[in-house]
Length: 245
Image 1 (tube, rainbow, N blue to C red):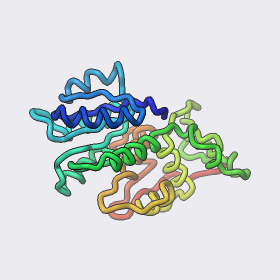
Image 2 (cartoon, helix red, strand yellow):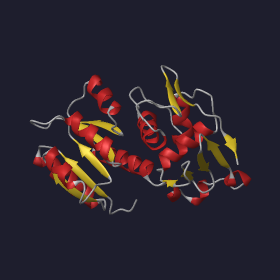
Image 3 (cartoon, one colour):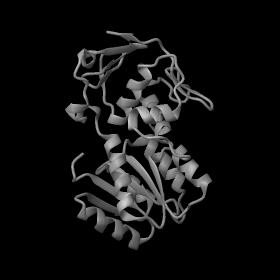
């Protein structure tokens, strides 16, 4: 994503939105400021942001409800920035689809680092640096499962009808890891280490968010997944057999 990436800031406190807008604009981002979730939702179709910074404490509005709408209808990144530091709120926020959760007061530099990390995960898989592509014949490998084809070298996913399905870098890396270990339950820690090179924190829901996005692309019914299934307390498993082509 370019430095002109659009970031929407939704907070009922004008001082907060101005602070974030000033800081992020100085970093080269384009920033829109919103104080009501309904106003942001109305503007999404005309000028969708790549990422939304969402405050949960909006008077008269359900912050979690706004988060659900953003996750269900838009592919933007979502970072909750709120004064609610309770562990339950944090878990709920991540479970409804937030990519990250930051509590106030926050350090601007840390928030910027988190924003950049989310935006990197949202990059199309084809934008990955060439140096990350395998240099051997494995680069030409295609993994086929349930009619889907994952082209490792081209970093492309094709559906059973032969249509290309765009994936972000994070989605591609996760699906590749699952497809390379079919029929095996992979823990969140394993998946995070394999795709991000780091261990999971106690409230880290990065993998859960990515799995949810993959299911919406792969499954006929994301609420009743048949391709990527959850194993309670253990992790995720790619169920169909995988063949190399």
